[in-house]
Amino acid sequence: MKYTVLSVAAEMRGTEMLQIFERFMNLPCLNERSAIATVTRDLERLVTVIDEMSTILQGARENIDPHTFY
Image (cartoon, rainbow, N blue to C red):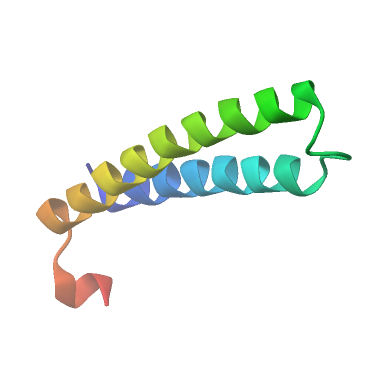
């Protein structure tokens, strides 16, 4: 992957992570069944997003010269 593609991919995953955090912070009551279901679904998605972000960042090692990156 080229640097710009890696950057865009990482930013998209970061945005999704922030949206998940925002939904959690805006839940009115964590004791309701619907809130528990939402948190469960979002945590499962968060695991996937973190895995995807890890893969993206590992790709950066292979495709970007560290001297250019830093």
